[in-house]
Image 1 (cartoon, helix red, strand yellow):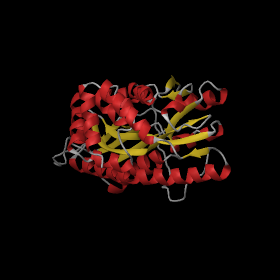
Image 2: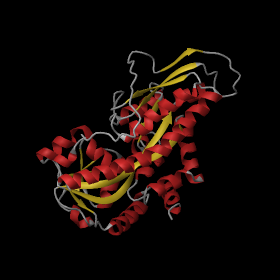
Image 3: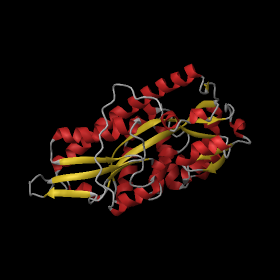
Image 4: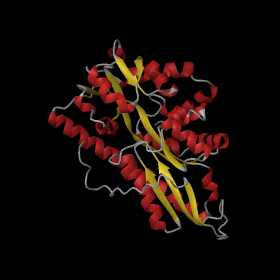
Length: 341
């Protein structure tokens, strides 16, 4: 795995597996007017990314550092690399209150509120700027408000951690190039719908098993953002990366009912910390992507296919989604497309 660039914050993890997931060391009536009394609080933040990835270094770690610097009697403890469970398990744990905060993709959140998974629809977003612009719209605010009403989960922020690209044993330039290829897609309704829309023969394999599946020929290819491809060294077992940019890799920073136990001062500090991470992650991801592509090109690790017929894919996908989304999903999708420039 390549070394991190030197502009990253240092990574420090505090892991106390036997402690309750949310702990007030001391409570006091601070008169802050917030959702709760506040007091000294330890909040556990879980995610599935490695400590080397931008979602951790520029995301989770920035949140922890900014909260510490705010000095409001609150500490963030980070549990990366699915230490507290895989995505589907963690979202259920946030709902039940067994996990405090999480960084999740929209598809996983769709298990508890279906419309939110549309944020992970293929070609819903044109690029990172489109994703950021949409998240500032009234349509996005309504979606997240409804998500909170249905689940009790509050969304503190969202970022795009890179556009997803195809890798395979041969180049993929048009939808017809997917014919006959066994392509790995994550096991979630939105990802599998994306596969159908793109024209792919989807095979469901866990991310942790993907390297071996490609190495052994169980599947011919897969799709992931560049930072994920590099994280598990898929350049060692794939010949081509085709720059389809077919999906924004969404991450939502969510918090359960413990949000209401924080004082107004603590809520403000935590929100500001997440806002800072939302600002930093996309640029960190872009930096990592460019460095990784350069390294692959120089080493001949994978051939970079940059003449993908994106419009052919986009048109095919748009027609499929409009025909197959239910009413609520289609409303979210149309709100996203309306925010495109």
